[in-house]
Image (cartoon, rainbow, N blue to C red; front, side):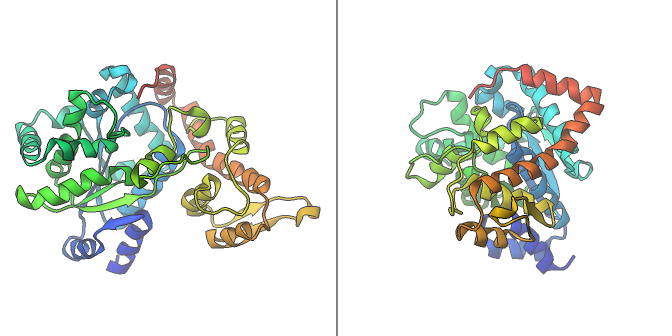
Length: 357
């Protein structure tokens, strides 16, 4: 694949790329750079973690990247997920991989690495200590946003280790690209700063957009904190659409969603259309009674933006359409778990676990 096509694919993943010049140089020098994303196994998967991650990872693979997914079981344990029960966390990690298979992620082309296995290597811990030695406590605490925590929150000692370890992940995996959400920005910037000083590479950061939950955005000034507060969150189940939700669940949640008339920015229904629906469907049909203009078919997000901003499409009609197409994306996942008894057992176990922050 020619350089421009590879670059365009990665650009379509990254809401922010640090830096594009570094990315171009990397793609010129390496046909198959290593890209990585990591996740805490922390409960049921919602559409941002299931559908959007699948879209982004598949694009990175199509751009020629060797993709590594870091199953951060120890990190979830340190961050008190699943009540700090490491076995529940590992069961959840296995379930999440099954969901991605069902979503169409190219799991056969991905290297899944469990933190519990890699962390047996002394060289990993040497990297953690090197990073800690070259980072102030204040800088590490500022990175606490990567855990979904505010700087003002009281952190356990284990949570203070977390940013140094995540930075070490990048170096230990020899990742050329850290392909993570915007909420992970601070630790990626730490890695870019420390990498050359410690004799490691300087990773390119490709930060994808954080999909909103279904509720009204909070009044928070700090941009990164605001993004964290707005993002879809499994601890607020009525504002998140889960990968095993029924058609009725999806309709109920979306019909109750925040969706101001004519508003494009910070409108969750417009976000879902942009980042997921138009990525998976060539056209979107919106069905309406003839007295309200009749059915319309849209071939691009730009077309949707135009008619919605002009008030030519009512929020109720947008909601009905988004609910229909989100269900179309989730239906194959439900089918996969109905047919695969081992996967279904994992899902039922995870659904029974208590979700903790």
